[in-house]
Image (cartoon, rainbow, N blue to C red; front, side, top):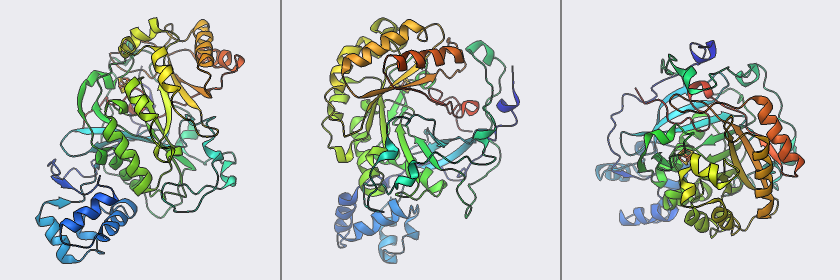
Length: 449
Ligand code: SF4
C-alpha cells in the first residue's frame, strides 16, 4: 500500500553538479595529508609550508577549486593545474530528502560510480548510552579535539516544525508489500539555505567505505550490488567533508558524529579506512570519539584496529545480529569464516578508553532473531565477553526482494526489556529516512539518473 510519505511528500532533490562530466580525477590533492601536501609543494619547487596553506584551504575552508586558493601564488595555481592537479574532492551529485529530515546523497569520487552517504539531523539514537556527550571540554579548534561544554549534555531541545517531529512515515512491513511502489525520484535542485540558524542540535553522518559489499548479509540491500571496488582515503573522507560543507557544519563547535556504517565493510578496506580516519582527525579536526566504525566481524581487521593509537581510533561496533552461530551463519555468511567466539576474542584486544563501550548492533527480523529466547542468549553472550558494552537494536528496514518481515514494535520493546533486565544496556535505534532508502541496510537501492 502506498502512503503519502512514500510518494509525493518525500522531497527528493536534485542534481547538484549534473553538468560536470564524470571524468576520472587524475591527480586529486584531496586525500593527501599534511606531510604529503608539503612533499608535493617541495616537489613543485615551493617551500614545504605551502602544504599547510593547502590543508587550510582544502580541509578547513573546504575550497573545491585550485583557482580559489588565493593563498597560493597565481602562477603556482596555474602550474599545478597544467600538471593535472586539482582539489578533486568527491562531489554530491544527487540528493534525496526524507520527510523526517534525513538526506541521502549520491556521491561521486574518482570515477563515474557513486556511493551513498546519509545525513541524519538529531541522529538515530545510535550513540545513546556511549557517553559521547560526557567528553571533557577541550581547546576550541585544536586538531583532533572537539570543543564541547557540559551544557551541551542538556536534553536536546525540540526543534519546532522539524519534519522529524511530525511523525514517521508508515512503510511496508515486508518485501511482498513493495510491489508497485515507486522509486524515489530526483526532481529539482535545492540547496541548504545559507545564513539561517541551523535546524538541528546535533547530527550523524553515515559514511560508505566501498562501492557495494562482498559480505552478503541476507537482510541488506547493499549486498545485492555485490562488491564493486574499494574507495580510497580521499573518497571516504571526502563524503564527510562534502556533507559538512553542505550543512555549514563548524567542526569543533557543532555536534556531529560519524558512523562508518554505510555501503561496504570498512575492515575489508582497512588501509584506506584507516587513512581516511587519520585525515578526518588530523586535518579536518574531528575527534575519533565522535566516530564509530562498524564491522560484520572481520577478525584480522579487528586485530589491526586494536593496535591503533587511541588518538586516531574510532569507537567500535560489531554487527552481531543473531544470538548464536547457527542463526548468524544463515543470515551473515561471514560467520562461517569467523564465528562469534573468534570475533569476541578479537574485540577483547581493543584497549577501551575510560567510559568507552563496545556497541553490538542487532537487527531484529520478525520470527528469525526477535524472539524472547534470542534476547536471553544475546544477554549471556555479551555478558560472557566481560567487556563494557551496550546493544543497539534496529528493527529491520524492509526493501524489495528481501524475504524478511519487520518485527512488531511490541517484540522490539520486549527484546530491549529482556536485555535490560539481564543488566545489558540496550537502546532502540530510530529508523531514519526509510522512505528514501536511507535507513540502515537500505543503501544502495537507487541509482543516479
Ligand atoms: S550489512 Fe554491511 S557488511 Fe553486511 S552486506 Fe550490508 S553493507 Fe555489507
